[in-house]
View (cartoon, rainbow over the protein chains, first blue to last red):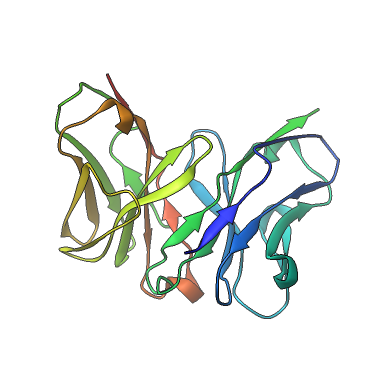
Length: 116
Length: 115
């Protein structure tokens, strides 16, 4: 069965600092991977997705993620964090047989706090 | 812009009550989902529907049922609410071709408290 692990429950960074959020997945075949962001009181918004091809994918709001098959990882990065990036971030993998229906397995989430 | 609307933002119910959570989407999406969100557990799939009157169980269907009588509306039903169903509930929708063309679109959630 697929699984997603986000090792960091809570991360705090200073505004302007770089950011890396970790995501490890367990999946038998080629994974389809996603990062979502949830701002307080809001639903989830897609930041970026990886299906195939270039292992470095660009998303919205200046985020990028790198797929590393050898490490089963899909870490999210941003070179310079803004106060508005404070939110909860979720990594997710599409399930086997689920790609037609959008069924995703989500990680536990990482809460990002940004200090001024 | 796709809009997924959940009828209630906050809901407080008593143990044993029958509870209905409503979700409506305005983009003619075939697929609709109910997730439950709990701190430290992320999102877990309760049920999903890929067409009117069609449904499949997710990972944690116990204590829940769903109804999809119209394409745009997907209801989550707690037959007899219990305190362990206190949680944030998120509805989402996607088109059948979601994989390539569109992501899951989420509502803003319903925070349910069962006392």
